[in-house]
Image 1 (tube, rainbow, N blue to C red):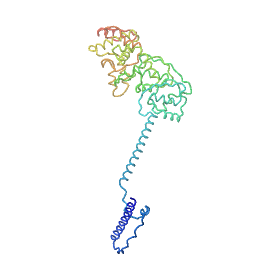
Image 2: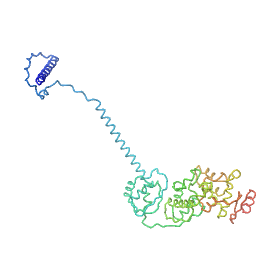
Image 3: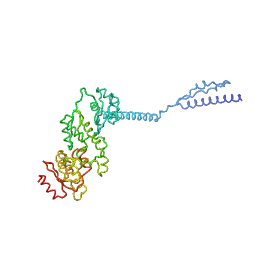
Image 4: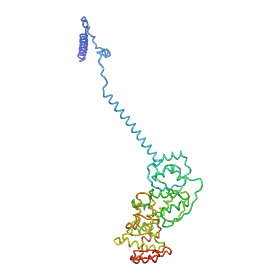
Length: 419
């Protein structure tokens, strides 16, 4: 068998050699003006052993044309370039968005007026403060706050309860909680029952607590997170949404205090006081807002608890008989409409004034006309038993006269020296 394989290899080698010679002759004939070559003798027979592989590889075949690069290679390169550019642009866009968000957080751009109460323990450092603010929803990036605080050089952080606003930038937040070098002075301020927000603001400014303008602006534009706030209707006719909810009392404030701190103190006091009568409010058939609105009118009309209960009965009788007495006809509501609501020169002020004036509008006004105390609130919840629909009082003696009919009321007006 080895002999046959050997003979076969010799034959294959001869065939390949003959094919190469034939190819060379064909190439020679195809060349133009090439002189004929003399026929050559056949090559001597190869040795018994076949040539080694390197010798076979040493043959020089005819050169072949190189084909141009396939277009597909170029397309793959363009695709990779597009992907690379897209990734770079996406990263740049993400970096830009992050920088804008970080800047907005530092400067509190487009943040709502929402008051937030925070508690700062004694010995709190900047890192701990940043996380307190983050947990309270005041800031988004604690690490950014720490960098700004380090750059600004924040002083020692005070401890206690603070009210801050979500629209306060990092610098304002640091100023709000930074401990001053000198001890803070305090002042005792009494807020009487029945004052409206403008009157409260004037008292606070007179006592050096805060600016009246800043106070009224904060009252009108800031959202507070107390439970009862959700029960105040979202009504455009309401002039001050917090009117009636700043509880009148004696307070000790810091001089030069934040308006947010002052408002929060008064609202916290209101929530504490109103929780004592929450069961009565639920059983009264009136909403909290209606109770406080009625209480504010009673507060403005009557000087003592006894007459408050009687005045409450008159208004309850009218409210329960709207077919015969559609209007409450309360002088204090007309005064509030003319002196407070119309002091605003906006287009809607006349509509609001008409809504507050119970000589022109039916039922209760849109909201309270002052901030009542607990006697008036209790009177609104517990009216005296009566069949009166009218009352008046002597402005000098403060004596009250009640009547069931209009004719009786006309006589009482003379008795009270109002005619």
